[in-house]
Amino acid sequence: MNYSRKLQKYFACFSLSVVLASDLLLTQKAPPVLAQIANSSIGNAVTFTCGDSEATIKAKNGPRVVSGTTSFYIGYRQVSSNNKNPRTIRFNNGIKAWCRDDYETTGDDGTGYGLYWDGGNVLYGVYSSTGSQTGNDFRRFATGRWLSSYGSGGGPKVAVIARINPANGEVYYATFLSAKKADDGKTNSLVVNALSWNGTNLTVQAKSWWTPRRANTNSMNCSGSSPYQYTVIFTGDLTTVNSASANTCS
Image (cartoon, rainbow, N blue to C red):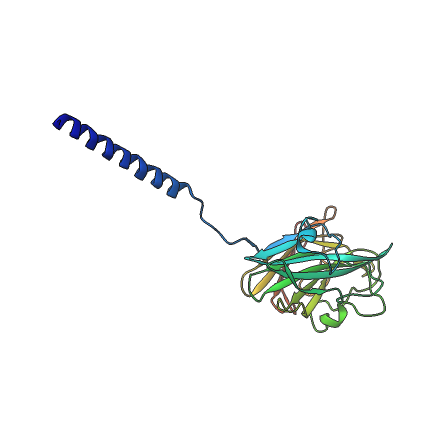
């Protein structure tokens, strides 16, 4: 009898140990639940309407920044065969909070292709421009900023960087970012590749065709063929470039 009781006690303890060990393993293997965060996104511009659902826009795999249940998307509306107008949209929990398609409504063939959001009050959008046309465009937001317009000429695609109010989509201010031909001063192409923010300054990495601009907006002296890898550090209000550099350029 004593032997039988000891055996029963042994198996009871063994079963309890197995259960505790299993619970420990399950606890260790369970992944932590993390908030979804994506601060910066630069990519190919996609088209969408302000009436599209978030699922529809997300499926297009265009630029998107997200923090928690809030997401921003950027793209364009195809107005005609040779004219696009940029647009930006915000969703909260899958519900549209706002959609802006009034930043540029001219004949300029512009799109939106980049975003940076710190998850709070700092939101930047990156847009393209192919020239100045009559009507409302980013020039009305760029007065007094580093570059206030597309510049001379037309056709080459340049960038526009805009600081946006995340709450309603209003543009606080913007600057054009372009290359400048050294021989005739006309505007040349520039495409933004990346954005980063350190709490004070906005760093922009881009591909610049001949030739990148110095911090004073004049043309650099470059060797080799373009495009050049170009880095520009803006003050947060986009009025000043603290530094500008490019490989094989000075």
